[in-house]
Length: 306
Image (cartoon, rainbow, N blue to C red):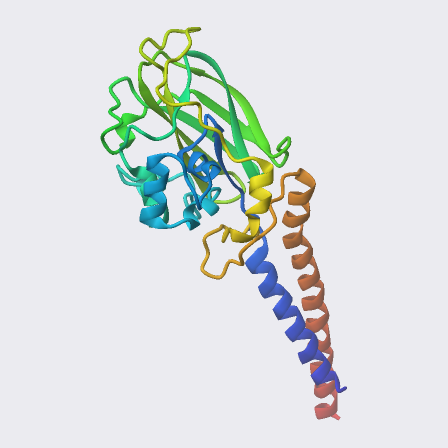
């Protein structure tokens, strides 16, 4: 093979590796939703996409099909970058302004609600791809009306919990503490997970019921049984039905279905390391290709001078 052809060959390989590296570096997406208290989408998914139990979950499937539930961990905005209020209009908070999840915005009083009371509360967020970022949980103001679409102004600006999360999620969960204020009746907890290593953010709405009094330490009274989130067995069994890609932002048109659901920091570490390794390899190939091209040019220059 001639020097010129070798240079072109190596250059093509280097360009291809650079293209792959550019496409994959820094795109290991985080995914998940609040399960304690359980979010709307987690509660409906746990009931079973094919045979939901509660009327609101039945209506959700009738309106949008089962795929939103199989993709329960993907209520996101890929390029949020902290601009949540600018990107999500009033009335579309629970869906993150995504038509696919529009049913989550329905202002209904029959969403499965978790009985709670004022005071300390332990939050659990089920993550299928842990990543560095901040989770912030807001609660609705005492004047919140669950029969009306949720607006940004309905949320108390003071978070009830905020946690820095990282690449380690014990058994697939982020667990942290917060404090619920005095409330009565149905309220809503709104969770924003903003990644710090990517502009991507995730959102979830969890309905809670403080009962008639809502006093600290008093048992909440709810007309509904406490809803449950999906278990590991269900998540694993339905993995092939998900269209969420865990190597990208999720919801991409070309995302392959049935990606594995990593829950350990080791699994994510392996994924996120791909970008730097590819960039290093591409850089090495690029240097070699450039050196061969320069050598070829020097040889041709000497021949012309002679």
